Image 1 (cartoon, one colour):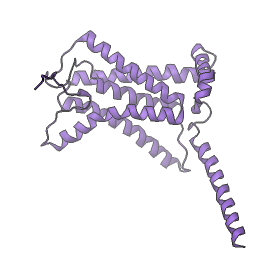
Image 2 (cartoon, rainbow, N blue to C red):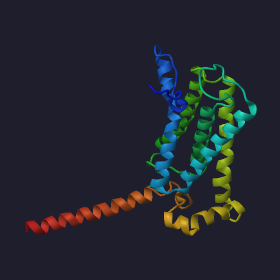
Image 3 (cartoon, helix red, strand yellow):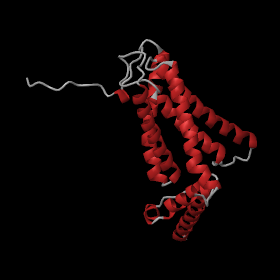
Image 4 (cartoon, one colour):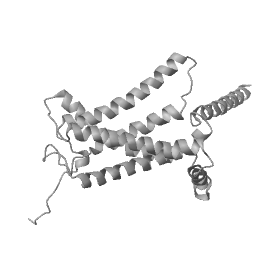
Length: 243
């Protein structure tokens, strides 16, 4: 039989955990959840053509690149050599989720406006639940890296903090400054990004520059009006046929 090259495990989706522990099993699933974010970015970018999601995705990749640079500069080992590849500081999963949750939290607090239900208490409760969910998800993923033995508490905490700082700085640079100061260099650059022929051809847009909810309610009202018009037309046609 011909000799084969040695095979390795794909660390991105390979997690070691204690199968006798329910907590360990749940955290093993949570520690894999960040890989679902990239496909979500791709779907949202293509489906909505929102510049926001494209910027956020690009920032996520830049944050991940900075993590690789930091790991190779610091060269701090993991607590367990048999768990994970490469260096351990800072935790890439923690930094990934720190950026992701912070960028969205900044957006919800600074620009996004949920469609009102008509009850202030319900609106506030929904917003609080979304924010709490983001913080909880990020915290759970970071904790899973420590609990499963892939990183020390120090590596996890610093990974989360670096991701949060990166997300805050990136959001304010690309979203707040262009929105508040449209005549600034960043504001003019954003206008060019949205108005150049390629972006127009691709139908790239900034919904939050026009609507607080990026156009969700306006688009739904337009759909509803058109749907009701077609229903009325069909009923009229059916009525004419029965006559």
